[in-house]
Length: 278
Image (cartoon, rainbow, N blue to C red; front, side, top):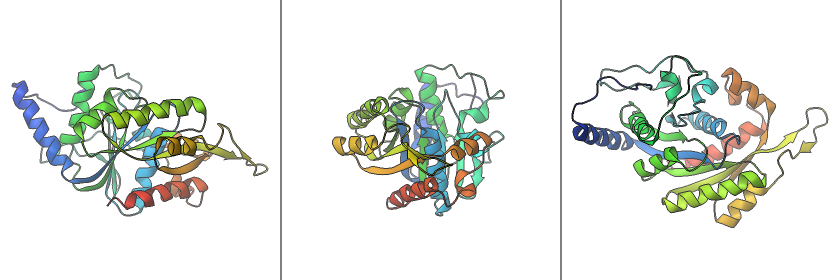
């Protein structure tokens, strides 16, 4: 088990009460909480979380990125973050800074061996997520982007129960297998009464580097049709770009390396839509 903080209070009831106070105090300083979720894995949810965070930070907003994909944390690798969060003078953990406007927290930053498996049941995951909110010194944020694991399990449910005003952005690819699971995610949000900010269709086409022809690797238009059918706002189509893969693997910011790309412009467009929340 990975320990996020040191000595635990002896009284469990007092510990819970103190944590609830810390969570509410931290959330009170955050204007917008956005849960990025997907119905299934492999649709580019974390890369979407990272790039939306970067796009918002580039627009001058103060952004926190909270990685609650506890079993598959990838945020530090994608942002090229190293080191372990340190306890500050207020006895809170300082999130790791990526830039002046963007900081992040992830369970991976606490694991000495990055390939170690996090083998936790629900209660431990619930506690870790609440610590990520209440025991981390986020300060005043315009946006807290929360990268959740695929599906509708413990992590997104904990966020929904802990952050009552969180809004969801759902990521999908165009093919029906992904869309079937997206409909489950939409119904999850409706069940827990979480507002859905919108849906993003990722990997939506691929421009051949040789001839320039657009190839629909996973079909096309499915995300927009699903959004329309389910009464959800459609935010953007983001094409597949192999350079995104290379940047994520090497911890290099895609948007800074490819500022004029269609992908960057799509993320900037979503960030502009999100800016209306502030």
